[in-house]
Amino acid sequence: MNEHTDKNFESRLTLIRDQLSEMSALIEKQLSLAINCIKSKESDCSETIQRLDLEVDQFEKTIRDDCFEVLTLHQPVASDLRLVFTALKVSKEMERIGDHCRGLSNKAIKSKSDLDPEIIEGLTSLGKSVLSLVHEVFDSLFKDNQDKAKESWRRDLEIDKLYKSILKTLINKMEQNESIVESGTQHILIAKSLERIGDHAANIAEEVIFNISGQYLDLEKIKIQ
Amino acid sequence: MVDNNINFALKTNNVYVHYGNKMAINNVALDFPKNEVTSLIGPSGCGKSTFLRCLNRMNDVIESCKVEGSFIMNNTIDIYSNDLPIESLREKIGMVFQKPNPFPKSIYENVAYGPKIHGITSSQSELDDLVKDSLHRAGLYDEVKDRLSDVATGLSGGQQQRLCIARAISIKPEIILMDEPCSALDPIATAKIEELINELKENYTIIIVTHSMSQASRVSSKTAFFHLGNLIEEGDTTKIFTKPDKEQTNDYITGRFG
Image (cartoon, each protein chain N blue to C red):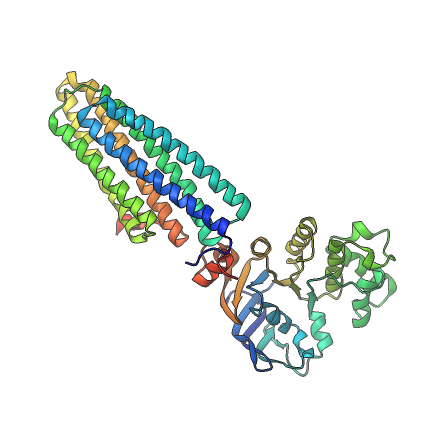
């Protein structure tokens, strides 16, 4: 694609893309730390996540304001309009992922270490799958790769299955041993946060597909395929 | 625009226009749905105005201009047929120009002139009603009803342009061609003309050349993009302004060239 005749417009659009990129890097860092928290339960780790979340929230506000300004002053159309629209929606999804990371780490450091190591390993494994999905969907966003976005959307279905399996195991364990109900519940909430992050990643994948194709695909069809 | 279910006011095919040896339009085929607004967009010199002027044979008066191709109105009338007098064609296809060009006559006479020439009315009261109705339709009547005998050139630019539209519709055309009708107008006058276009499409087919992307997106349901005499892309306006098929179209409407 050629550059804009209006260099000011061009630089504003570039800035929005750059901000999304920086925000995505913070999200990946936050999520990676949050996953470590599940096992380590270190409060330092959680504090770093809280601090990063403030930065993420600020990025979301800045991108929102910049998009609003571009819409007002430049009335973008076609690929530019889709980019602005996508940036607005993706930044909101990212901000929600940041919130889940914060909540997840809070729960992790407050929960007792009285669960089977295999459950913690299962949760960590779920976290790693979610992190890999988030990385892949960001990659599809910045490389304008529609196939990768569709693949990411499909991968969220696997995350959902993994979450359900962990949920089932945790409930079984709690039924067998009432003393772990408190920490078991905390870890169900952790698993739920990870599953929700997967959903936000899938939402971002939908926006990536829209940004490239101009259409929201019937993703149920992808599900069947 | 090849949907057989659509009722077309005008169909064009294999259109070539040359000015001397220079090709201005290169094999264009474009159809215009009835009672819809179609915008022709493209950078200066792309051929959009030349193409528009072909549609009521405005180019006939340019000696070096040679027009080829098929121009069929309502599936039956060949616009370039020798059997069709130019006056009859202009009765069917009216035109509004970039710069308002009222005759140096009264407001009333500006609108009454066409119907008189074409013998559309048979009595003075019928002519009075037609003038009043045309001014109404052009959204100008309330502003000029008390001064119909005043000279038209005393009106503001926006009012003059609406008077020209009233003049164009007074002879009850089927198609109205507009060549950048708002480029000399301020935003309020532009908004009034755009509102008028939206109302007029109920009774007329409108084809408008515009340099304003936002105007094309606001007023038209179909958009055609021209570049260097070629029709690059045409289709629903929403599609053209959200996800055009051609990268060249995307580059132009987003301001990446032109």
